[in-house]
Length: 91
Image (cartoon, rainbow, N blue to C red):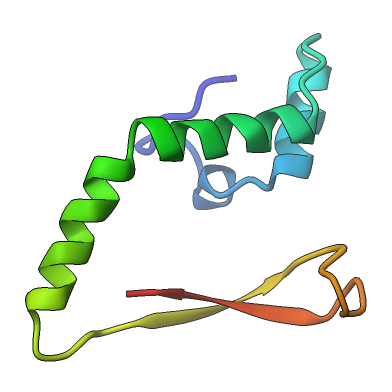
């Protein structure tokens, strides 16, 4: 599965873990969504924390913050129906 930003449609760049799990299975690799999400969490905590800290410091230097709000569907969110909308904010 080759994913290069320049030669893959935009929809492929944001493939859900469900779709990625299905794609890997098609190529003969049994990689569960649980494994994929654990890799994402591990990498974010062990390789990208320094980047988060840098951008957080830079954000706090500003007199204002700009944000983008995106609706997302989160399945099995405690206290909510399975298909209810949640929101993600990017500052």
